[in-house]
Image (cartoon, rainbow, N blue to C red):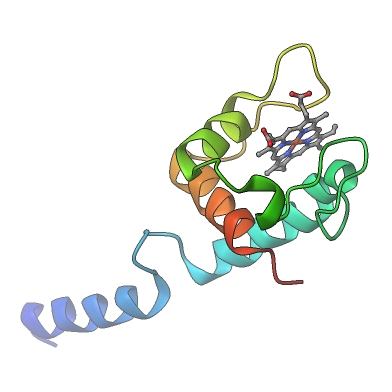
Length: 106
Ligand code: HEC
């Protein structure tokens, strides 16, 4: 195969797997599982609250994705909310923040 054909093929493959934010669909699935299982262990499986506050769109009204992703990355000192920056990139924290604002689909 020529180099050009290789280039065209790899471009096609990468656009198939990577959404606009650069997160692959496999990684989106992992982030979704993390949100339900890990975040859900404190915020409730349906984000209705538990040890941590509810993270439903109606509760988060007026808070933006920048604020939420910053809390996710850095945690809240003095509370049980841990920092996730060891596990999540800023883009991934923002992806999660946007899911929360839209309402997490189970
Ligand atoms: C060990 C329990 C625990 C886990 C796990 C946890 N949180 Fe929290 N979270 C909390 C607590 C407690 C607060 C409230 C902190 C405070 O008192 O300011 C909080 C606050 C937040 C806030 C701020 C809400 C607001 O209205 O200001 C966001 C956003 C958030 N958590 C998202 C997440 C996400 C996303 C995850 C998973 C990646 C997660 N949390 C995992 C306990 C947890």
